[in-house]
Structures are given as structure tokens and as C-alpha cells.
Image (cartoon, rainbow over all chains, first blue to last red; front, side, top):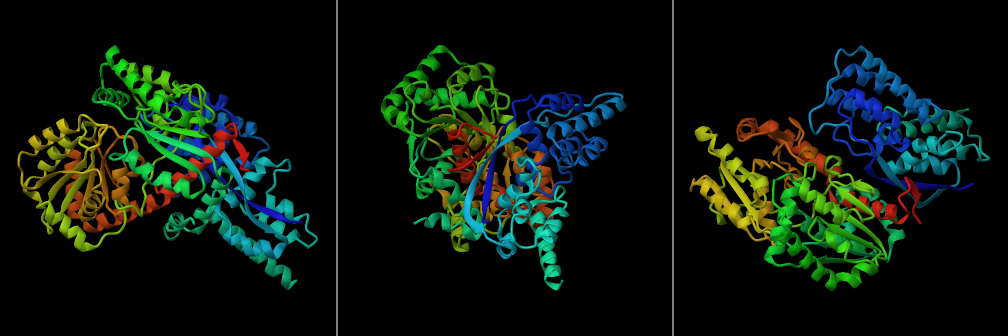
Length: 219
Length: 412
């Protein structure tokens, strides 16, 4: 069964929600923004160019630290892993709860300077076929290190939102192969990707797959 | 066949080039018309000078048209430009009439081509009215605003908004520049062409000859601002900041800029700059022709520090150019300069001539810091602000608008 490797590119667009200038406004806007905005600021951050290694994995946390200068809030928002929830609505509820707790503790609500508002964005993702396919585990092992950031993102990360079973495309394909792939799928399952850059995800995937293949051969 | 694109592989890597080709494949044969107001001078013309041939190489049928107009028209469009950047400017009905008459004439000339195109990309306010004058549009029309319109003059924006709200989409350089419009607004940062005359490597002899030709000493630290003679670029503030250095340095200042055919204020600002320089032999004010790209390149490469002390800035491609050449940049805390200059990493953001003087002094005294910041600046540009990323985003947008702007789509 052939696996067609896809690639994807993103272009960001305005999210259609007014900017937030305080934690209170962030809470209000977070409650009403489209799911696409949530997904962009929580999950698509890894495929966006950044200046440095981000200190926080999502934009809400990064803005709280850099512009609101509220590191307590930043830490609480930053530790939320959206892939641990079944839906974005659940993630939204968790983040609103964090903001409500924090707002409750604040003696006054600080605002950010002009130009540092939180701007709600979303993205258009264009997916295209690379023309490269995988037929078996050996192809997968060979191609994995050469896959683009867009391919790794699309098949390993974005798939969890796209697919009903919330699993990555590689695992879904491997289970269909006639070969024994349980150890490989197990290796993929244990790659904790959320706090990593795409380049780091690729490195971890390659290492995990190589290890699984070697142990399979030895056994 | 795609030789030009191939030449960027050594800079951005083969996967990035391959990705561009795959993205462009579904758009092969699509007719695209870019319209702006000048072929020479300014960042928009420079972007189109590489973007158009690059899209053509990828198999798209691309044309670049320029609106023509009289002095009154360009006075009005300069007013639009200043007004979008927040300057209080008048907009009497005579100006609106001058703008609309010239727009009508341009529409007569371009209508057939624009109405037949699959994509029309209108750059900035000068040609914006063309959409209203082309009622039988076949394709998608996108308004590309290169200007920092974060706090526009209300009257100017109210008029321009009527011209642009009918577009299918608009593009801004930064989220903070985007306006409330009844169509999707995309964010695309500009970029530079690393292999253009403005940015490619130069022989040392050419750099020396350029300095000699303009009477600039070869052995003095050079501080340079490259920009049009425009008040928003604050050339007077640069001179003021430079003069604050007093005798603490033997540095020379170069203010180099070309004129643009769509900027009627350039000569007046140039005259003010000459007056402010007050015949100081350490200040070199160079009015260069619009195609003096290699000379600009040489001046930037010869500099130890590059300044872009703008008060308002759409993006600041001269900042990108300097950073690509490994120079730390002292920039005004405005617009797109903030996207490029990170305090203590790639340069310094300053608020005043005093701030500029302070940071110049710091960088002149610490050459290792200068080198480190310059290297970081070059890395930032390599990863984010080269034309391949820019081209990829244009292609992505075109596929997106053609497919009805779903958030997730498969290119076919």
C-alpha cells in the first residue's frame, strides 16, 4: 500500500477578531475566536518562521510573557498541550479557566503599550503532492530524514487534528502494511513533539525509527 | 529552463526550491497582472523586478503594468501615501478629481488586459481605483498595501477604503498594518533578492572605487543611511544624531538615496538635507540614479553600521539589505523595522537622534559585538526575508484565493 508524501505551505491571515490589550481582553476574545485562530496560535506556531527558539510553545503564552510581562500567566498557558485534548473546544475551556483564575488574583488589570496588542490570526494551508511515495518500511526509513518541514508537520502533527482517530499519518499507514510494524508505531507514539521545533521533531523521529528498526532486526 | 530559480539553491537549499515548483505547477498558464506606479525607485519596483520574471519562469503568464499620470496625480497619490502613514493632509475635491481622471485614463488603457486576467495584483493606493473601473472582471483581484497604514489619516482612509473594499483579498506587511475590510487580509512580509546587483557579493576594488568616486575616505568608519529623500525617513534626524558624536569619532556619514518618479517631494527634502548637512566634510549626501544598485551595495558593504532612522516605515528593505551584508542596523522603532531589528541581537531600535548617537558610539567601540550582531542579522534574513519565502507565500495566496479561501485546501 503506497503512502503518498504530501507537503504543505501556510499563509497567515487576520483572524477577524479585535486585538487584545490586556489579559481580560485576551480572555474575552479567546472565548469567541474561531477554532482556526486557536489552532493557529497553539499548533501552527512550529511552521512559522521565528527569530529565536521560542521560549513558550504557543502565542498566548509568549505574548503574556513578552508584552503583558506576566510570567505566571505565561507559564500556565504555556504548559497546556492542545494535543492532549479531544477537541479545540476543550482546549479553549482550559485556557479560559486559566485566564479567569489569573484575573481573579490580579489587583488591577495591566494593559500593553500601543503596538504590542495580541493580534488574532489564522492560516490558509495549501497541501500538495510531492510525487514521492513509500511502499514499505525500508522506504520510510530512507525518506524520513529527507522530508521537508511541511511534510513532517502535515503527516505527523497536523494529521492528529485532521483524522478521526487523531493519529499521525505514518502510524495509520504502517498499521496497514503486511510487515510487522508494532515496534515502529510504538516508537512514533512516544515522540513528544509539542515542545519541539519541526527540525527537532524530524531528528527525534529519525532516531526513534532507527532504534526500533535495529531492535527489530536484532530480535 | 528554470535556471534563475536554480541559482538560489545554494542559498536556501534544494527542498525550498522544489517546494516552489510543486506549488506553482497547478498555476501554470494562469494570467497574472501586477500594477504599480513606477518601474524604478522604491521597494515595490525592486520587488516586482524579480517577482515578475520569477513567476514567468515558473510557467505563469505574468505582466507588469505601470499607471501613468501627470504631476497633479502623483501629488495626490503622495498625499494618500502620507495620509496612510498618519500625516494630517488635506483632501479637497480637486485632488479627488485629479486622481479619478488619471485613474479613468489608465483604466481605458489597461481595462481589456485587467478584466481578462486570472489574477490582478494592485500595489499600493496609486492604481487602487482600477478595480471600480473594470466591472467585467474575470479573475481574482488582490490589493497589496506596502505602506504602514496602522494609524492612517481618517479622511484619506475613508476615501481609499471605498476604492479597495471590493477586492477579493488584501495583503499587508504586518498584522498591525491591516485594516478592517470586508474581505480576507493576508500578511506577507517583503523580501530581497540576494543575487541582485543590490545584494550580491562585490569585488573590494569596486567598493574602493565607489568610495573614491564620491570623495569618501577609505579608512574612516562609515555610517550609512540609504533611503529616498522623504521626511518619514528622518534624514534630518540622522544628521542631528551624527553631529552629537562630535569629535569622539572620525566616522563619516553617508546619506544616499535615489529619486522615484512617483515622489514629488523628493527634491524639497533633498534641499533640506543639504542645508542641514551645512557643508560638513564628514557628511556625504548622495543623490543617486534609480539604477545605481551596485553603488548602493558598495556603500552598504563599506559601512560599519547602517542606520534606518525612519519615523514611519512600511517594511524597510534597506534594513534587510544591510543585514544580508552582515551589518548591524540602528533603526527607528517603527513599522517593519521592528520585525527585523531585535535589540542587542541584530541591532538597536531607537526613538531619537540621541538614541542613534548613543548606539553608534557603542557599536563603534565594540567591534566584536558589531561582528556578532551582523552575523545574527544575516542569519535572520537568510531564514525569513529572502525572495524564495516571498514567492512561496504569493503562490500559496493565489492558490488560496482561487479555491475560495478555505482554511485547508489541496492544490490541484
